[in-house]
Image (cartoon, rainbow, N blue to C red; front, side, top):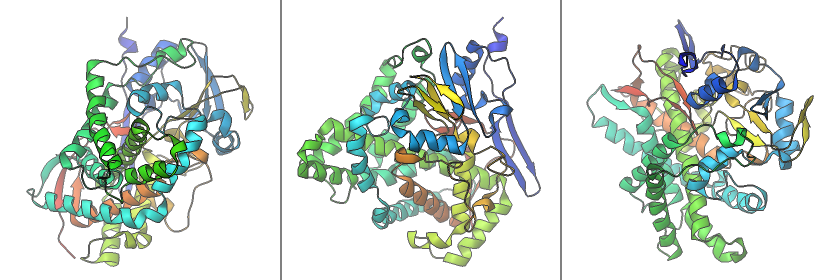
Length: 471
């Protein structure tokens, strides 16, 4: 009786000579009854969309009496995230409930006065003017991974998602917390986040049953252990900084100084912990996922990988790439930007309408769910020709997408403050590692995108690592 309701995902991947359609969910073709949709969304939020959803439009459905509005038009997206930002700034009950236990009132899920007060602080901390300082950390940490991989036998098997998570966790640890965190603690925080994601449900049923603020997440013993593990480490670091034992270049130290100069900000230990945890989560998880998908794409598209290798040889020779080389590494940048198009780290940007409104030709009720889905938007043929194909050349030179059609870091006032940090980190790490290694995904491996809080390959990404000869 319930066999037809059992969730599954039909994955498409097509490879031809010099053409790659990388792994993605097939279009939904089932009946749109509420139970079927909810079960499918809990299994895989990327597989509930029909072919007709991938069009330049604004559409609406009702699910158990709750209005859901899918906004897939650049002009309408601009209206939601910029023109009427105040009415649509609130994250959905699902996102708030999913992260409040871990992040408290951190910037990612806060709104109103708390968001207005803290956004400028985080902007200053991860401002692009600080990239020279952060760049040195990125270079050094990536070089350490090169040394570690060189110690492995050629063709060694690793899970590259976990490798990239360790790399980006160490980078963000040294940037946010200073050099005193250590590999063991950085790994513990990274593993804690990974465990937390696996335990959080993709759907808050209470919201669809009539509770405008959703229902609190059940804090199971496993969930409590994951959060406790993270909070214990971050609390100690914040307390050390407050006691004057911090690295004077770290992001947390900058927050501490700002609080000391401006006591009215009320950045106590808990608030500092919340912002540090938010920066850590956003800064390490999203970049790790992006790099993982980039290795998958390059493995499946060796002609693009060759273009990257040729560029690295021309720009850097045998010298390790640095932050100063990034303006000349156009193929590396284009690969990362195309990876972000195909596999946006946060593939669903959802908001809750505060008041009644009108988006395009649709009337929107208060507390409705507003869905902007980069996964769909970036694969809409009206904005990207051959939208499902891996074509980094679409980002070469001065080519840019239509405004509000490409939003891997969100858009409007809530655009990710760490955009430049994360983008430059991904390009630099890709360049340093690609110069020395080829990363191979087995031809017969079924790669399945999975949307939890972020977009990852389900089960990680097993690969083999092969050393390249120097130029």
